[in-house]
Image (tube, rainbow, N blue to C red):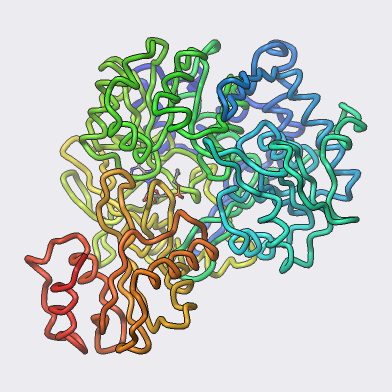
Length: 635
Ligand code: WT7
């Protein structure tokens, strides 16, 4: 019997057990029955978390775009694959059928080839949420080029770092982008970034806002005329199972961003299978994930997972507040959306706006609501459940990461009974465990510890681009023979998991994963700054916001602190992006340090959280006197 579509709890437990007892035969069966292979594998899985090395479906050959597009043409050629909803509702939606998608991806792939892109080359994609974004990913995959999507809200500096780290020879972008009532000069940001990127030979520019931009002779080319001239037939490159499909950067707690490398076959199988089950997608459903394709959520659950299932996937260019705070619900009504997947920060922002924005619309098409990116607090969960789902649509609180490629812990809607703030049960094939500080596994229920995964799943990232050692150190060195997630979690009396948050120096702001180190580096560039430390504190919309403690070089300096705050935030915005700006900046004379000179963030975090009743033992600090001063002047 096929286990591709789980429909009730009994079946979940039965299939889960099978997937854990005999992972290889389980995944082989899923892969065999539901995908198109040019050649089958010689070996389902080989792995060693010590090296670390993981290979799935070795020896198999395929092209993911044949799975996402070509194989649907016979039965779903006229079905909408991508439903594009533009920033301005008056512009009207665009329905791109599977047949049209096939033509457009082929043309784009031919353009890439004509411009000299070859199998294995890296292509940076810095494009807003327009159809060309999804199409450019697929066009790369069609010819075996490795895409490196950079969220089109990142600064020139962040873009340049990501282009150079992975040696991209091409950048795909647009003349600009819409964001609510504003426009953003994307091409200007690319030009600035490329001043420090010598390897980039070609920039393809899509027209979106029709602004007057500068085109650099010999380097920059308008996309549309090239597409017009290209053939709409392009044979799919036959790829090996473990060939890289893409690189996607994620912040770490230290140093530069990590280019997570995802490969082809395992990623395809896992994103497709999780999509089908975690959203209970059925043939005529319209599925909408509000994330940007610049994040892993968009890669896996706007593009690859849905298309591999022949689904209709909505691609929304705009923001939840434009033209007003009813926009999400307007789109749900207009396109009769069945599955809606968003982030807690969006839910909290909308919950603040009053119910009239929700109640105006007919949301009866909704069957499944999803949440991802950070822990969803109880209040937001209930607001979502009561007002959007009307108590009828199960909420799937799905936990996963850029590194995991696909959803790891989630209720299966209509299968797993939900519990507010709990991601509930591991997905099929996922073997989580909780570890204590001494490195022992916590057995049984009602325990709390650090979340690890004991066994490989098909879409685990295989390495960090150009730095396998860092991959090993970050994920496989904390606990022997286990993948360490960086999150804390608890397991309740029935085995449900609740994610309690990061245990490292990553802070999640509005669903964006931010490392403290790169932000501190940016602040420290300011000539007046001596030292800085960033911590998170609870924020009712963003989930967490950033609190910076900064010491200045010249303490007696009479510079206006408000101006300094503006300059520091501008620096952060330039170096990383506006999402990393600090909500609060406290200038202080000292930062609490251990005798070995390490800043005690734990204390700073407590002060930022206004929870100073129990700061623990501070007498061992190098400079305990600064703590009282920081507390007295806390913001
Ligand atoms: C981190 C990964 C993968 C989607 C987007 C984020 C946090 C993610 C949940 C959830 C509690 C969550 C974790 C994780 N996180 N989903 N449902 N409940 N926390 O990807 O940027 O790689 O961030 O997001 O802390 O480690 P990412």
